Image (cartoon, rainbow, N blue to C red; front, side, top):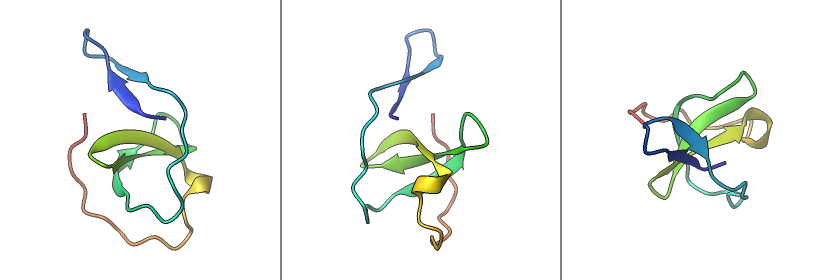
Length: 66
């Protein structure tokens, strides 16, 4: 789910989409619940389900996401 900030500064969700298998994603932090994490793909933040991530992923540098 793409993370889309509203004009009021709150975070909302864009349409659900599939990030291609093998895509380079960067870990940004915890998700909106215990089942999700926040990542960046092609410069945009997304929430993805933990079970959809490869079990053997390389640790990525943490950075601020909006």
